[in-house]
Image (tube, rainbow, N blue to C red; front, side, top):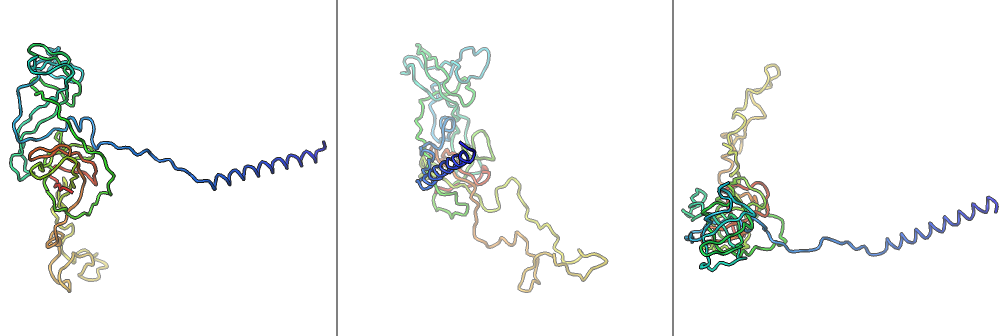
Length: 324
């Protein structure tokens, strides 16, 4: 085989391969493309400690008969947490049995705040965690700390676990930063868990709207504040430039006694007094700034526990809330 024949055969093979590749690419380009997206799944708006240890404010009294009275190795410390063993003053006559899960709570006192018009809101109850009974004796029960959201202390109260119905997440329109009032129940965000004052997403808060306001678990609340109010820095709204209209010019090239950077003047011919920022706001309708959204997790008589699900900026204690 001479050199020319070899070159012709190689060229023919390359052309055939190119034809097959092009046909395959064309077929792929004309075929339908299937895009596999994320699998739709449902999930709750809160989990873990935001459910079991959210805390609440209740108006009624609480049963204080069952409590933590001891702990294994209590001589070595005063605090107890997950996996430690504690003693409950619940013996065989109390009806408790191995495998029972109990909630551990700590009443912290009566809630009084300037962020409400309801007066005394009731007693704040901190939910510390849960214990599981492992052995029942005649006078006491031995329990293992199953979950702890804070240190357990002797004297903490024990009560049956409250079954929580947590709302499911749902797709919603974008947060309306300029939404009008709904006309429904309105109150204040008066406190947050762990003494927080500047708040963000997934933090637990308490609002002075409860069962008496027809608030229910799963309700969405808009968080807002009057426009221009509520920031840590309070502006006194004084003007940053003196209210004069001459004296800013140079000595060498002054063109007159008037400055075109003088303050705003009132009147049709700008012959009146200076218009200040504070005066410019007078007479306008009530405006509000939407800063976030809550979902109600627990409802008591006067107060509801909620979790922050969306924010436009930081949320503060003292902000207003409104049922959507």
